[in-house]
Length: 115
Length: 112
Image (cartoon, rainbow over all chains, first blue to last red):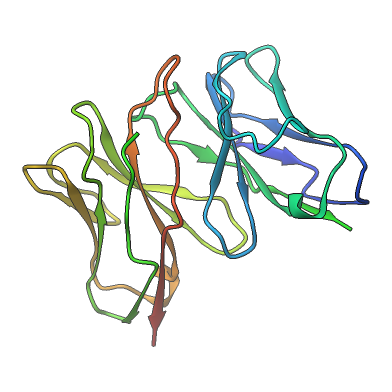
C-alpha cells in the first residue's frame, strides 16, 4: 500500500503565525512519531502516539507545540506563534506497533521556513 | 534510556568495506539495536536490526559482541550511493515507555 505521506511538503510562514502539519501514516500502523530535523543536524524526537494517545510528549520543545491523532490514523502537529528557530524539516514516521522491533517508516517531511 | 555514541563522520572509497561502530554502554536487557540510513532530503529508512551476535541481510551486516555494549554496522564494498548519514538506535518502546531516539548519526562520504 501507500507509504507515509505528509502535507504540505513546504510551508513558508511569517513569525508569529500558527501552522498545522499533517501526517497520514501507513494504514494499520498503530504507532506514529514526529521528529524535527534542523539543517545538517540529526533527528530530534518530538512526540509519539500509540493509537490516539501520546505516552511520550517529552520531546516537545515548548508549549507552543502540540499534536493530536484521531481515528488511529491522521496526526497533526501544530506550532503556535512560530519563531524563526522553528524552521526545520518535520518528519513523521509510523510503525505497526510502538515496539523496538518494529521498523519506522518515514514520510518525505514538511520543510517549514519561518521568516 | 540507552545513550548511543557514534563517530560524527567517516570517509571511504568505492569498493571498500566500511565499519561504523556505535557505543551503548547502558543498554538494557530487552533493548534491540537498530540502524537507519538517511539520504539528503529524504526521511531515514531501516537498514538492519539485531539483538545479539551477528545479523546479515542483503544490505549490511550487524555485529554485536556478547556484552552488547557496542555494535558495528558493516557495509561491504561501498559505492557512491552509500553516501548518507547512518543512525544507531537502541531502546525498547511500548505503551507508556520512552520512544526510540535518533542521535546525530555518522555521516559517511564515499569517494570515487
